[in-house]
Structures are given as structure tokens and as C-alpha cells.
Length: 530
Image (tube, rainbow, N blue to C red; front, top):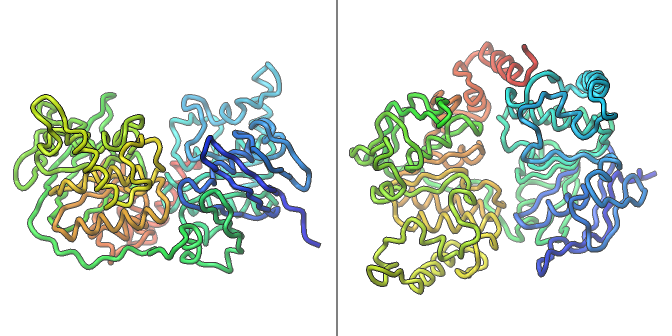
């Protein structure tokens, strides 16, 4: 007898104005399984899960939970139906304790003390049952992101969730932390919980899921047993064509040194030392990848090199010193020195979302003579024409310079920023998180553009939290932890385990002792060792 699905969506449709986000979607998720949902940006994955969790109301369609038709007008109704959601960006109060965050919104009464006492007992039981060890009295701001994710899972379980939705759960985790999360999910599955996993990482889909559903342009294109498919087939189902999953590039042909960084230090406006005595160099015709978990100084490194932040030490372009004091430390001076910068956060730092695409393409380069009509006015028609040409070359969809930046998907927003910076023929390209939130088809294109720039003899500093991306693109890899360079490796002479150890602050990666040390290090970061 076939078991009743834990979740069944029938004929779900949702439109936002003229945009049809979901079109007559039907899907069944069996109980006690891990079900993956993948698709390009804008495919409708998040909208579908937001309908299931009560953030949106479907225009039409039905939801069944454990065989019972269920109305879910809001998240409280979803929680009452046994659904919990762990968001990509955690919903935790930083200066509250773990216990206070778990109880928040689920208090027994107006008296907080009895609620906290009961929650402490239940938290201890849940931690034992699901291997989710946690210090209930630790402040959220004092624990690592891996531990914070456990708190989000415990919050859902405390509220009685039998169905867990996880949105891009490994985006901020080291490989070791991701492996631990997968062990937790397997344990939850063994206890009968049903898990829906939204991710763009095909390797994770293959490793952890039982079944995978593929969405494209608001429709469900396939649902298959994970064991019966492979990454290439899934990528083709997502994009509608064959996709190169491996970066294709010839060996680097490094030439003269372009960038030299010597004893660079950066202290933020709160007095926190973010970059600590960092030194490295990059030559023409090579890509140096900086690997590391977000928050370990990579962002500040890009900002000081790009002219957004002050620092001390020495930075030279083609042997000429760059000012780091702030007197001449700005993006304009960097561009004049042949530095282009694709920032980590395209929406906050790379684009003005309410401005047109053609205006965004001119930002930072508005003094270009080709953009000037005379001393007082810019030649807007020339900028629009140039933008349209760039959009065609970089396959921006739709290729309409008049649309505002917010009208484009994340992948196409990224292409606009890349087109603006790469087509300036820089000596040095600084690029942060080039494919963050980008679908697999756009990832392929972006990687090709970065490799083409390297092959044209340019120097590239690549910062990414995606180890697959670093391993595939970089000619040399440096790993940052707590503001320092922990080591440098050639991709052909290392692996993700060794890089993961360096990302956790362990420099002794060659002995069993080093491997044991990283487990203790990660345990302490998670609050398991006090």
C-alpha cells in the first residue's frame, strides 16, 4: 500500500501582476524522505515554498498535509500544520540567548519564567534525540553560523514541526559544517521527519536527497528518484539545454606581476581588526582564488583594494604604490589605475536598483569621453547604445537598457555588473562571489567570461565561499581564516577536505592529529566544548 504523501500540492498557480511565478504545479513529497527542489533563478521555487509556509496565498490550487486538505493563510497556520522553515538568512535575535530565541513567539503564557523552564527541558531532549547539541545559555552573537543553523532547526522542532523546509542551508558553512548538517538531516529522516531541501548545489542534491523535483519558468518539469539521475541530466532539465558543469580552461600562462599586497591590515570603524598582515601577489594571466567562510576578512580585503575602505601596509599595481589612507583611496582612482571591481553584493554595492540598466552601466565610468556630449552634459543616447551592445555580448535577458535593475533576475543583474567592469579591459579584476544566487546556466556563462579575461592576460582576484568554484576557476588558492592567510595551495595538489581544514583555522592538515584538532575546533565553535 502506497503511503499518504506528507505534502501534496495540486494545481498551484500564483501570479504577481503580469508575471506568472507558478503555473499549475502539482507535487507530492512522501513522509520520512528528503525531497530536493532545484531550478534556475526565477523558476518559482521560493514562491512555491512561500505558499506552503503561508507567506503567499495561491491564486488557485489545493494543499494537502498528510492527506488532509489544509488552508494555510499565514505562517502561524503552517506551524499549526506541523511545517517549519529554516531560511537562508537566519531569523534570530543576536543579543538573545539560544533558549530565548527558541521560546520567542511560542511562550506558554504571559509569564516567561515557566516557558523558559519548559523550553530548557524540551531543548535538552531534542538535542539528545536529534544530535543537535547546543548551549541554551549562549548568546546568538557569540556562536558560529553552523550552530545558529542548529538553533533554527531546534526552533522548528520545538514548535512541533514534522515537515522541515530548508532554503539554501549550506551557503555559509564550511565543508565540515555542511557534512555535519547532512548527518543531522539523515537523523531527522530516520526519526520520521519529512525534509524539503531547496539548493542550487547539484552535488548536495545527489548526496543527501531521496527524490528531486526540477522547476523551470514557473512549471514543474520533472520529479525523479535521485538514484536514477545524475548532475548533467538535472542541469539540462533545469536550463533546457546541455550545460558544462566543469570549468573548461587551459593551464595558466602567468607573466609579469600586476598586484603586490604586503602586510595589509584593515581595522573597521568599531576597532575590530579584520585583515591581519596579509601578503600575496597576482601575475598577469592568472586567477588567485581566496577561499574561506564568509566573515573572515575577505570582504574587507576586496573593499580596501577596491578603494572603499582604508588600510595600512603596501599595495602596488605594476610596481606603483596605491594610497590606502583614504586621501586618494576611492573607486575612481582605482579605475584610473586599471582596477575593475565586481562587488560581493550586487544589489547593495554594484547597482542602484531603481535606476535604469543604462544608468547602472555608466556608474563609475561617467567621465568616459565616449559618454560625454560636452563639458556639462552626458550623451545618454550613446550610453544606451553602448549598454545594449554590452547586454547582447553578455546575454542579458531581456536586452533592454530602459528596464530598471530590479526588473532583472539575480543572474542577469550580475551579468550587467560583469559587463560594465570586464569590458573596461582592466589590468586587475577584483570579483567577489561572482555566482552568488545565480542559476546554473548563468554560472556557466560567468565562469567562461572570467576565464576569457585571464586568457587575455589579465590578473584576477576571485573571492568565493563556493569551494567548487574556487577549485574550478583558480590557478592558485589562498585560504583566509580570522583575517589571515592560512596557506596557499595549487588546485591540482589539494582537495576540499584540506581546504576545509584551513578554512576552520587548522594549518596542520597532513597528520591524523590535525584532523582530530579540526573536529575539536568546530565543536568548540558550535558550543559543544565550553
